[in-house]
Image 1 (spheres, rainbow, N blue to C red):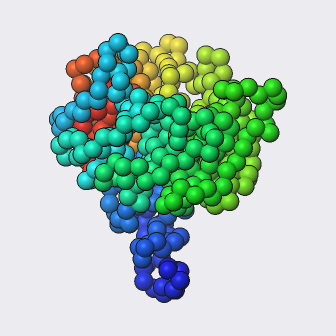
Image 2 (cartoon, rainbow, N blue to C red):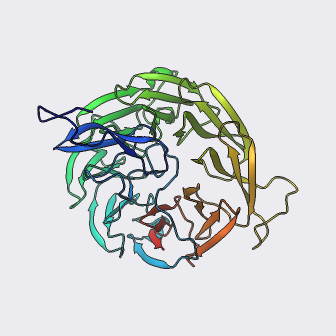
Image 3 (cartoon, rainbow, N blue to C red):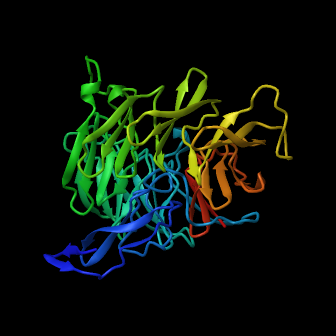
Length: 441
Protein backbone atom coordinates (compact mmCIF):
# COMPACT_ATOMS: atom_id res chain seq x y z
CA UNK A 1 0.00 0.00 0.00
CA UNK A 2 1.77 3.19 -1.12
CA UNK A 3 1.42 6.11 1.30
CA UNK A 4 2.34 9.80 1.14
CA UNK A 5 4.33 11.51 3.90
CA UNK A 6 5.97 14.95 3.73
CA UNK A 7 5.53 15.02 -0.05
CA UNK A 8 7.16 11.68 -0.79
CA UNK A 9 5.81 8.23 -1.46
CA UNK A 10 6.65 5.37 0.93
CA UNK A 11 6.36 1.99 -0.74
CA UNK A 12 6.31 -1.14 1.42
CA UNK A 13 7.61 0.66 4.52
CA UNK A 14 4.88 -0.84 6.71
CA UNK A 15 2.76 -4.00 6.53
CA UNK A 16 -0.63 -3.41 4.95
CA UNK A 17 -2.72 -4.78 7.81
CA UNK A 18 -2.63 -6.19 11.32
CA UNK A 19 -5.17 -7.84 13.59
CA UNK A 20 -7.26 -5.49 15.70
CA UNK A 21 -6.75 -6.06 19.44
CA UNK A 22 -9.89 -4.32 20.71
CA UNK A 23 -12.33 -7.25 20.70
CA UNK A 24 -13.04 -6.79 16.99
CA UNK A 25 -12.57 -9.41 14.27
CA UNK A 26 -11.57 -6.90 11.59
CA UNK A 27 -8.10 -5.86 10.42
CA UNK A 28 -6.15 -2.70 11.12
CA UNK A 29 -5.03 -0.82 8.02
CA UNK A 30 -2.87 2.27 7.46
CA UNK A 31 -4.96 5.28 6.45
CA UNK A 32 -2.29 7.98 6.82
CA UNK A 33 1.34 8.55 7.70
CA UNK A 34 2.06 11.36 10.13
CA UNK A 35 5.59 12.41 11.10
CA UNK A 36 6.94 9.28 9.38
CA UNK A 37 4.79 7.04 11.62
CA UNK A 38 1.81 5.05 10.36
CA UNK A 39 -1.71 5.89 11.55
CA UNK A 40 -3.45 2.55 11.92
CA UNK A 41 -7.24 2.32 11.92
CA UNK A 42 -9.52 -0.67 12.32
CA UNK A 43 -12.32 -0.37 9.78
CA UNK A 44 -14.53 -2.48 12.03
CA UNK A 45 -14.38 -0.63 15.37
CA UNK A 46 -12.67 2.59 14.19
CA UNK A 47 -9.96 2.25 16.83
CA UNK A 48 -6.48 3.77 16.46
CA UNK A 49 -3.31 3.16 18.50
CA UNK A 50 -2.07 5.94 20.75
CA UNK A 51 1.15 7.89 20.19
CA UNK A 52 2.18 5.77 17.21
CA UNK A 53 2.30 2.71 19.45
CA UNK A 54 1.97 -0.86 18.30
CA UNK A 55 -1.59 -2.14 17.88
CA UNK A 56 -0.60 -4.90 20.33
CA UNK A 57 -0.21 -2.39 23.16
CA UNK A 58 -3.02 -2.38 25.71
CA UNK A 59 -4.77 0.91 24.97
CA UNK A 60 -8.28 2.09 25.82
CA UNK A 61 -8.97 5.27 23.92
CA UNK A 62 -12.61 6.02 24.64
CA UNK A 63 -15.60 5.29 26.85
CA UNK A 64 -17.14 1.91 26.09
CA UNK A 65 -13.78 0.26 25.50
CA UNK A 66 -13.47 1.37 21.88
CA UNK A 67 -14.85 3.74 19.26
CA UNK A 68 -17.79 1.44 18.51
CA UNK A 69 -18.85 1.48 22.23
CA UNK A 70 -19.05 -2.33 22.34
CA UNK A 71 -17.87 -2.47 25.99
CA UNK A 72 -15.26 -5.05 24.93
CA UNK A 73 -11.69 -4.94 26.25
CA UNK A 74 -8.66 -6.81 24.94
CA UNK A 75 -6.87 -7.08 28.30
CA UNK A 76 -8.01 -9.94 30.53
CA UNK A 77 -9.14 -9.39 34.16
CA UNK A 78 -8.24 -11.66 37.12
CA UNK A 79 -9.80 -15.11 37.06
CA UNK A 80 -9.57 -15.46 40.86
CA UNK A 81 -10.82 -13.14 43.61
CA UNK A 82 -8.84 -9.91 43.07
CA UNK A 83 -6.88 -7.79 45.51
CA UNK A 84 -6.90 -4.04 45.89
CA UNK A 85 -4.00 -2.40 44.02
CA UNK A 86 -4.67 1.23 44.90
CA UNK A 87 -7.33 3.88 45.49
CA UNK A 88 -7.19 7.39 44.07
CA UNK A 89 -9.13 10.03 45.97
CA UNK A 90 -10.48 12.99 44.06
CA UNK A 91 -11.31 16.19 45.88
CA UNK A 92 -14.39 15.55 47.94
CA UNK A 93 -16.98 17.95 49.32
CA UNK A 94 -19.64 16.03 51.23
CA UNK A 95 -21.99 19.02 51.08
CA UNK A 96 -22.21 18.60 47.29
CA UNK A 97 -23.04 14.89 47.42
CA UNK A 98 -20.91 13.74 44.49
CA UNK A 99 -18.07 15.91 45.73
CA UNK A 100 -16.04 18.65 44.10
CA UNK A 101 -14.06 15.87 42.40
CA UNK A 102 -16.90 13.41 41.59
CA UNK A 103 -15.27 11.18 38.99
CA UNK A 104 -17.20 11.18 35.72
CA UNK A 105 -15.84 8.01 34.10
CA UNK A 106 -13.68 4.93 34.36
CA UNK A 107 -10.12 5.62 33.20
CA UNK A 108 -8.87 5.49 29.63
CA UNK A 109 -5.23 5.14 28.60
CA UNK A 110 -2.59 2.44 28.56
CA UNK A 111 -0.02 0.50 30.54
CA UNK A 112 2.04 3.57 31.50
CA UNK A 113 -0.61 6.24 32.12
CA UNK A 114 -4.32 6.61 32.84
CA UNK A 115 -6.66 9.56 32.36
CA UNK A 116 -10.02 10.45 33.87
CA UNK A 117 -11.97 13.60 34.73
CA UNK A 118 -14.12 15.01 37.50
CA UNK A 119 -17.54 16.46 36.99
CA UNK A 120 -16.34 19.72 38.46
CA UNK A 121 -13.59 20.53 35.99
CA UNK A 122 -10.45 18.54 36.75
CA UNK A 123 -8.58 16.16 34.48
CA UNK A 124 -6.20 13.68 36.13
CA UNK A 125 -3.34 11.53 34.90
CA UNK A 126 -2.16 8.73 37.19
CA UNK A 127 0.38 5.92 37.10
CA UNK A 128 -1.58 2.68 36.52
CA UNK A 129 0.85 0.66 38.65
CA UNK A 130 0.71 2.81 41.79
CA UNK A 131 -2.23 5.20 41.40
CA UNK A 132 0.16 8.09 42.01
CA UNK A 133 -0.94 11.33 40.37
CA UNK A 134 1.25 12.36 37.43
CA UNK A 135 -0.56 15.64 36.85
CA UNK A 136 -3.93 17.35 37.20
CA UNK A 137 -5.36 20.26 35.26
CA UNK A 138 -8.32 22.37 36.36
CA UNK A 139 -10.84 24.07 34.06
CA UNK A 140 -13.83 26.30 34.68
CA UNK A 141 -16.42 23.90 33.34
CA UNK A 142 -18.39 20.79 34.25
CA UNK A 143 -16.98 17.62 32.67
CA UNK A 144 -19.72 14.95 32.71
CA UNK A 145 -18.14 12.59 30.18
CA UNK A 146 -15.35 10.14 29.43
CA UNK A 147 -12.15 11.61 27.97
CA UNK A 148 -10.59 10.20 24.80
CA UNK A 149 -6.91 9.84 23.97
CA UNK A 150 -4.81 9.47 20.82
CA UNK A 151 -1.66 10.91 19.23
CA UNK A 152 -0.13 11.93 22.59
CA UNK A 153 -3.24 13.97 23.35
CA UNK A 154 -6.11 13.74 25.85
CA UNK A 155 -9.44 15.18 24.69
CA UNK A 156 -12.05 16.39 27.17
CA UNK A 157 -15.43 18.01 26.72
CA UNK A 158 -17.65 19.96 29.10
CA UNK A 159 -20.03 22.89 29.51
CA UNK A 160 -20.32 26.08 31.54
CA UNK A 161 -17.58 28.56 32.40
CA UNK A 162 -17.56 30.44 29.09
CA UNK A 163 -15.57 27.94 26.97
CA UNK A 164 -13.80 26.65 25.01
CA UNK A 165 -15.63 23.42 25.70
CA UNK A 166 -13.57 20.88 23.76
CA UNK A 167 -9.95 20.82 24.89
CA UNK A 168 -6.87 18.96 23.68
CA UNK A 169 -4.28 18.39 26.42
CA UNK A 170 -0.71 17.18 26.21
CA UNK A 171 -0.67 13.70 27.76
CA UNK A 172 2.75 14.26 29.36
CA UNK A 173 2.03 17.55 31.13
CA UNK A 174 -1.72 18.20 31.02
CA UNK A 175 -1.13 21.57 29.35
CA UNK A 176 -3.65 22.76 26.80
CA UNK A 177 -2.61 22.25 23.18
CA UNK A 178 -5.71 23.82 21.66
CA UNK A 179 -9.37 24.48 22.41
CA UNK A 180 -12.53 24.66 20.33
CA UNK A 181 -15.58 26.80 21.12
CA UNK A 182 -17.13 28.18 17.91
CA UNK A 183 -20.08 29.63 19.80
CA UNK A 184 -21.31 26.33 21.20
CA UNK A 185 -22.89 26.22 24.66
CA UNK A 186 -21.11 23.04 25.65
CA UNK A 187 -20.20 19.39 25.16
CA UNK A 188 -22.16 16.81 27.14
CA UNK A 189 -21.21 13.77 25.07
CA UNK A 190 -18.11 11.60 25.33
CA UNK A 191 -15.73 12.36 22.43
CA UNK A 192 -14.30 9.60 20.26
CA UNK A 193 -11.24 9.44 17.97
CA UNK A 194 -11.70 8.00 14.48
CA UNK A 195 -9.84 8.39 11.17
CA UNK A 196 -7.64 11.17 12.54
CA UNK A 197 -10.61 13.18 13.83
CA UNK A 198 -12.00 13.87 17.29
CA UNK A 199 -15.80 13.56 17.01
CA UNK A 200 -18.19 14.96 19.64
CA UNK A 201 -21.72 16.26 20.09
CA UNK A 202 -22.82 19.56 21.60
CA UNK A 203 -25.78 20.94 23.53
CA UNK A 204 -26.71 23.18 20.57
CA UNK A 205 -27.67 20.47 18.08
CA UNK A 206 -24.34 20.20 16.26
CA UNK A 207 -21.88 17.32 16.00
CA UNK A 208 -18.30 18.20 15.01
CA UNK A 209 -15.25 16.39 13.64
CA UNK A 210 -11.94 18.18 14.24
CA UNK A 211 -8.41 17.34 13.20
CA UNK A 212 -6.77 15.64 16.20
CA UNK A 213 -3.47 17.45 15.64
CA UNK A 214 -4.60 21.02 14.97
CA UNK A 215 -8.22 21.31 16.11
CA UNK A 216 -9.21 22.54 12.63
CA UNK A 217 -12.79 21.72 11.74
CA UNK A 218 -13.19 18.92 9.19
CA UNK A 219 -16.98 18.91 9.13
CA UNK A 220 -20.05 19.56 11.22
CA UNK A 221 -23.68 18.41 11.06
CA UNK A 222 -26.68 20.28 12.47
CA UNK A 223 -29.86 18.48 13.62
CA UNK A 224 -31.92 21.69 14.01
CA UNK A 225 -33.84 21.11 10.76
CA UNK A 226 -35.40 18.03 12.34
CA UNK A 227 -36.82 19.99 15.29
CA UNK A 228 -40.20 21.70 15.15
CA UNK A 229 -40.17 25.38 16.18
CA UNK A 230 -40.05 27.16 18.45
CA UNK A 231 -36.52 26.24 19.48
CA UNK A 232 -35.35 27.92 22.66
CA UNK A 233 -31.94 28.25 24.28
CA UNK A 234 -31.20 25.15 26.31
CA UNK A 235 -33.85 23.14 24.46
CA UNK A 236 -33.29 19.48 25.41
CA UNK A 237 -34.14 18.49 21.84
CA UNK A 238 -30.82 20.03 20.74
CA UNK A 239 -28.76 17.62 22.83
CA UNK A 240 -26.42 15.44 20.75
CA UNK A 241 -25.48 12.31 22.68
CA UNK A 242 -22.23 10.32 22.63
CA UNK A 243 -21.30 9.09 19.14
CA UNK A 244 -20.07 5.62 18.20
CA UNK A 245 -17.88 4.96 15.17
CA UNK A 246 -17.67 1.77 13.12
CA UNK A 247 -17.86 0.57 9.52
CA UNK A 248 -16.92 4.03 8.23
CA UNK A 249 -19.82 5.81 9.91
CA UNK A 250 -20.57 7.95 12.94
CA UNK A 251 -23.77 6.96 14.73
CA UNK A 252 -25.42 9.04 17.45
CA UNK A 253 -28.73 9.69 19.17
CA UNK A 254 -30.21 13.11 19.84
CA UNK A 255 -32.74 14.79 22.08
CA UNK A 256 -35.13 15.21 19.13
CA UNK A 257 -35.89 11.47 19.24
CA UNK A 258 -33.81 10.45 16.26
CA UNK A 259 -30.77 8.29 15.56
CA UNK A 260 -28.38 9.48 12.84
CA UNK A 261 -25.66 7.84 10.77
CA UNK A 262 -23.06 10.05 9.06
CA UNK A 263 -20.06 9.32 6.86
CA UNK A 264 -17.06 9.52 9.20
CA UNK A 265 -14.87 11.23 6.58
CA UNK A 266 -17.29 13.77 5.08
CA UNK A 267 -20.00 14.18 7.72
CA UNK A 268 -22.72 13.59 5.11
CA UNK A 269 -25.95 12.01 6.30
CA UNK A 270 -26.27 8.32 5.43
CA UNK A 271 -29.62 7.75 7.14
CA UNK A 272 -31.74 8.78 10.10
CA UNK A 273 -34.62 7.12 11.94
CA UNK A 274 -37.05 8.03 14.67
CA UNK A 275 -36.27 6.13 17.86
CA UNK A 276 -38.73 4.59 20.29
CA UNK A 277 -37.16 6.70 23.05
CA UNK A 278 -33.92 8.55 23.72
CA UNK A 279 -30.96 6.62 22.31
CA UNK A 280 -28.16 7.82 24.58
CA UNK A 281 -25.20 5.61 23.64
CA UNK A 282 -25.54 3.39 20.56
CA UNK A 283 -23.29 0.40 19.97
CA UNK A 284 -22.22 -0.32 16.41
CA UNK A 285 -20.68 -3.67 15.50
CA UNK A 286 -20.82 -6.32 12.77
CA UNK A 287 -23.26 -4.37 10.58
CA UNK A 288 -25.77 -3.64 13.34
CA UNK A 289 -26.66 -0.68 15.58
CA UNK A 290 -27.93 -1.38 19.11
CA UNK A 291 -29.66 1.06 21.41
CA UNK A 292 -31.88 0.90 24.50
CA UNK A 293 -34.97 3.10 24.69
CA UNK A 294 -37.43 3.61 27.53
CA UNK A 295 -41.17 3.26 26.97
CA UNK A 296 -43.05 3.88 30.18
CA UNK A 297 -41.70 1.45 32.75
CA UNK A 298 -40.11 -0.84 30.17
CA UNK A 299 -36.87 -0.74 28.22
CA UNK A 300 -36.79 -1.81 24.60
CA UNK A 301 -33.56 -3.06 23.07
CA UNK A 302 -33.66 -2.06 19.39
CA UNK A 303 -31.35 -3.36 16.67
CA UNK A 304 -31.00 -1.68 13.28
CA UNK A 305 -29.14 -2.47 10.07
CA UNK A 306 -26.11 -0.15 9.96
CA UNK A 307 -26.37 0.23 6.16
CA UNK A 308 -29.81 1.87 6.01
CA UNK A 309 -31.23 2.07 9.55
CA UNK A 310 -33.94 -0.50 8.89
CA UNK A 311 -35.16 -2.50 11.87
CA UNK A 312 -33.59 -5.93 12.39
CA UNK A 313 -35.29 -6.86 15.64
CA UNK A 314 -36.35 -5.46 18.99
CA UNK A 315 -37.00 -6.96 22.38
CA UNK A 316 -38.78 -5.56 25.42
CA UNK A 317 -37.05 -6.04 28.75
CA UNK A 318 -37.93 -4.86 32.23
CA UNK A 319 -35.77 -1.83 32.91
CA UNK A 320 -32.92 -2.14 35.39
CA UNK A 321 -31.57 1.38 35.01
CA UNK A 322 -28.80 0.72 32.47
CA UNK A 323 -28.95 2.16 28.96
CA UNK A 324 -26.04 0.36 27.30
CA UNK A 325 -25.35 -3.13 26.01
CA UNK A 326 -22.21 -5.20 25.52
CA UNK A 327 -21.79 -7.07 22.24
CA UNK A 328 -19.20 -9.70 21.29
CA UNK A 329 -18.96 -12.86 19.18
CA UNK A 330 -22.56 -12.74 18.01
CA UNK A 331 -24.06 -12.30 21.48
CA UNK A 332 -25.67 -9.34 23.26
CA UNK A 333 -25.46 -8.91 27.04
CA UNK A 334 -28.00 -6.73 28.85
CA UNK A 335 -29.48 -6.50 32.35
CA UNK A 336 -33.18 -6.62 33.16
CA UNK A 337 -35.49 -6.87 36.14
CA UNK A 338 -36.70 -10.25 37.32
CA UNK A 339 -39.65 -11.65 35.40
CA UNK A 340 -42.67 -12.36 37.58
CA UNK A 341 -42.45 -15.68 39.36
CA UNK A 342 -38.71 -16.21 38.97
CA UNK A 343 -37.00 -17.41 42.15
CA UNK A 344 -33.60 -18.57 40.87
CA UNK A 345 -30.34 -17.10 42.16
CA UNK A 346 -26.62 -17.52 41.67
CA UNK A 347 -26.32 -19.25 45.02
CA UNK A 348 -25.47 -16.28 47.25
CA UNK A 349 -28.75 -14.51 48.06
CA UNK A 350 -32.22 -14.06 46.64
CA UNK A 351 -32.20 -13.03 42.99
CA UNK A 352 -32.44 -9.31 42.25
CA UNK A 353 -31.97 -9.00 38.49
CA UNK A 354 -31.31 -11.05 35.37
CA UNK A 355 -28.44 -11.02 32.91
CA UNK A 356 -29.94 -11.77 29.49
CA UNK A 357 -27.75 -13.15 26.72
CA UNK A 358 -29.32 -12.79 23.28
CA UNK A 359 -28.50 -13.89 19.75
CA UNK A 360 -27.21 -10.78 17.96
CA UNK A 361 -28.89 -11.74 14.67
CA UNK A 362 -32.35 -12.62 15.89
CA UNK A 363 -32.77 -11.38 19.47
CA UNK A 364 -33.63 -14.90 20.63
CA UNK A 365 -32.60 -15.67 24.17
CA UNK A 366 -29.54 -17.92 24.38
CA UNK A 367 -29.44 -18.10 28.16
CA UNK A 368 -30.05 -16.04 31.29
CA UNK A 369 -28.55 -15.81 34.75
CA UNK A 370 -30.43 -14.56 37.80
CA UNK A 371 -28.16 -12.48 40.03
CA UNK A 372 -28.33 -11.36 43.64
CA UNK A 373 -26.63 -8.09 42.70
CA UNK A 374 -28.19 -4.72 41.90
CA UNK A 375 -26.28 -3.38 38.85
CA UNK A 376 -25.54 0.34 38.77
CA UNK A 377 -23.63 0.15 35.46
CA UNK A 378 -23.74 -1.63 32.15
CA UNK A 379 -21.52 -4.64 31.51
CA UNK A 380 -17.92 -4.80 30.29
CA UNK A 381 -16.55 -7.86 28.48
CA UNK A 382 -13.02 -9.23 28.49
CA UNK A 383 -12.39 -12.76 27.27
CA UNK A 384 -14.76 -15.11 29.09
CA UNK A 385 -15.49 -12.60 31.87
CA UNK A 386 -18.33 -10.09 32.13
CA UNK A 387 -17.93 -7.35 34.75
CA UNK A 388 -20.34 -4.79 36.19
CA UNK A 389 -20.63 -2.45 39.17
CA UNK A 390 -23.36 -2.39 41.81
CA UNK A 391 -25.20 0.19 43.88
CA UNK A 392 -23.54 -1.04 47.09
CA UNK A 393 -19.92 -0.59 45.99
CA UNK A 394 -19.11 -3.99 44.53
CA UNK A 395 -17.74 -5.22 41.21
CA UNK A 396 -19.05 -8.57 40.08
CA UNK A 397 -17.36 -10.89 37.54
CA UNK A 398 -19.44 -13.49 35.69
CA UNK A 399 -17.92 -16.46 33.88
CA UNK A 400 -19.91 -16.42 30.63
CA UNK A 401 -18.68 -19.88 29.63
CA UNK A 402 -19.69 -21.60 32.87
CA UNK A 403 -22.61 -19.19 33.35
CA UNK A 404 -21.98 -18.43 36.99
CA UNK A 405 -20.47 -15.71 39.17
CA UNK A 406 -16.67 -15.98 39.17
CA UNK A 407 -15.89 -13.48 41.95
CA UNK A 408 -17.02 -10.32 43.69
CA UNK A 409 -14.91 -7.46 45.01
CA UNK A 410 -16.38 -5.27 47.76
CA UNK A 411 -14.98 -1.77 48.34
CA UNK A 412 -16.53 -1.82 51.80
CA UNK A 413 -17.83 1.73 51.38
CA UNK A 414 -21.38 1.11 50.12
CA UNK A 415 -20.87 3.88 47.55
CA UNK A 416 -22.32 3.09 44.11
CA UNK A 417 -20.01 2.18 41.25
CA UNK A 418 -20.80 4.93 38.74
CA UNK A 419 -19.33 3.61 35.45
CA UNK A 420 -18.82 0.22 33.86
CA UNK A 421 -15.36 -1.11 34.79
CA UNK A 422 -12.43 -0.66 32.41
CA UNK A 423 -9.78 -3.37 32.04
CA UNK A 424 -6.27 -2.13 31.23
CA UNK A 425 -3.11 -4.25 31.48
CA UNK A 426 -4.95 -6.88 33.54
CA UNK A 427 -6.16 -4.32 36.09
CA UNK A 428 -9.86 -3.61 36.65
CA UNK A 429 -10.54 0.11 37.17
CA UNK A 430 -13.76 1.79 38.25
CA UNK A 431 -15.03 4.97 39.99
CA UNK A 432 -17.47 5.24 42.88
CA UNK A 433 -19.82 8.01 43.95
CA UNK A 434 -17.47 9.20 46.73
CA UNK A 435 -14.97 10.54 44.15
CA UNK A 436 -12.65 7.53 44.40
CA UNK A 437 -11.15 5.46 41.59
CA UNK A 438 -10.31 1.86 42.51
CA UNK A 439 -7.79 -0.47 40.86
CA UNK A 440 -7.97 -4.21 41.56
CA UNK A 441 -5.90 -7.08 40.15
